[in-house]
Length: 164
Image (cartoon, rainbow, N blue to C red; front, side, top):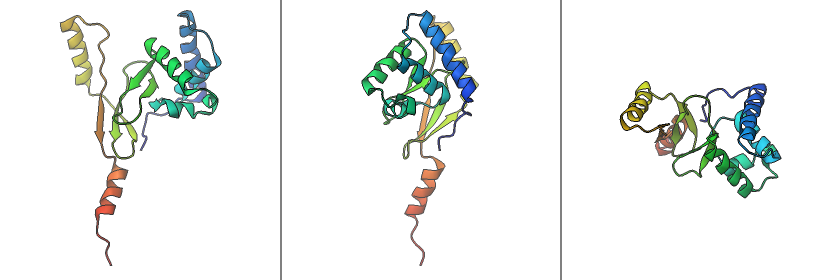
């Protein structure tokens, strides 16, 4: 079910990772192999994934999960990565895209994700809240939970009595 926006080409993802890395280096980050690999993997795959899932990427398999977690927290604090709440799944992380962050439908059965377009009214609400309250950088996180069509079909099939 993992229906997403098209993944960037390898050239686009490499360029995006290089741009983010340059920005981080200007802000005092040290260039490490783990940082370069993590940024490349995250730029190549825009889906939110758990630390364990990021750790399964070929270029990150030799990295300790604790190292990845610490690095992910630094990237989150730097505003490059966001933590995504996907219900009962482990904490997931995603590279922040340019523009508004994506919102998702989350299957409570299989854990699948489908990116959904955020209604304009939600963006307007963010702007109105910021204007009325004086808060800066107002953002939202919006995830919808339900059962995907594939799981619903399998569930319906399992619930149907067998015909002899």
